[in-house]
Image 1 (cartoon, rainbow, N blue to C red):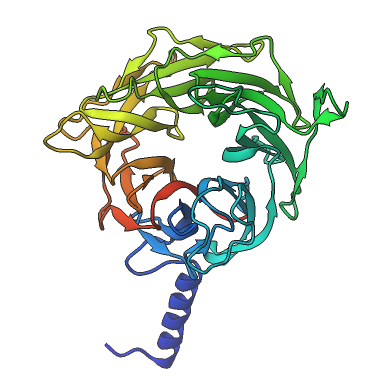
Image 2 (image 1 turned 30 degrees about the vertical axis):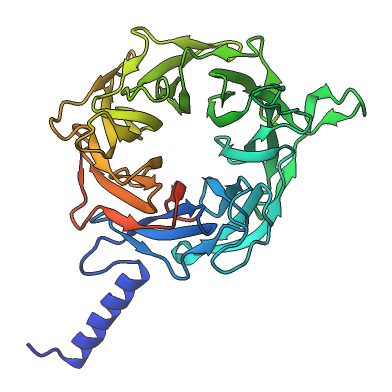
Length: 423
């Protein structure tokens, strides 16, 4: 078939428009971007997410340097214009490009997000403590909360001579135009020596993760406790009457918020090869208390074991747990276990999908996200890969992507984040 000159021009215009929208003949266009951290070379792998297939393709110039050493957590400002990477410090001293503008100690790196998900380094910020490990925005994106494992005045001892190694939260206000971070002082507590307001908010012993639930903030601490704060409109954190909450966990590994509930994954006693459990709580109306849900802990789905992260889907109907190992010694693999969530009680029940649930993923998953269109689930894995799954909106079951579910990211991948359209 021959096309007229007008027909050829029209076809060229269609192709041009399709390319501009990120569409191809084999895909459904780009519905969002994904960024995956890796500690081996202090890098960030960046991908476009295909709407039709969930396939990941690298954006131009990926991977990018994380700007610091040992990147472990990543946060996208609502609207998608800025990305913040938490560098724990103490890891590899160089990147693949040799460029570490924030140095080798812990800190926060700010990036702006350009076309096709390209990251451009902006500047470095220091939290007030040391060994930062997690960060989260409030719902408005006006404040960034950074969790440090060691507070400025903490004295960390050894097993023989234990010390008070408490952590802290550094609070920053976020400039809506530049993404620049500005320190928010603790108006509740003064330094006993200088009589100046503290520059941080103290929390429990060696914290590992934090989550925000409405006007409450909770940190998960290594002694199996939670430190609760009430969060205000100015970013200020206020101690509640319950300064420490015992979780009842044996080895708590993660804490997330889902609706009005908080969920903690518990891997159980070390070296017991048990499936572990999920501890569900509701947030109290006052004092940011945590109340155990009716029915108590939910057992993880065997043969999965060592749960390390969990996610409630956007519909609040399905709950997923990333597991790093299995009780099946003849078929070792990492997996995702899937549950339904009863709307009225928030009770978890295993999704019947034998023998697929637990669903296999890459080795040693660390974090998990749902894509911006709520069609796909992805895990970042310690083996340097990302695993993608199709999420069935009617049943919560997971299945492999149509064009392959494993994507190469960066060495020793840690956490990942996604964003939709950039506002």
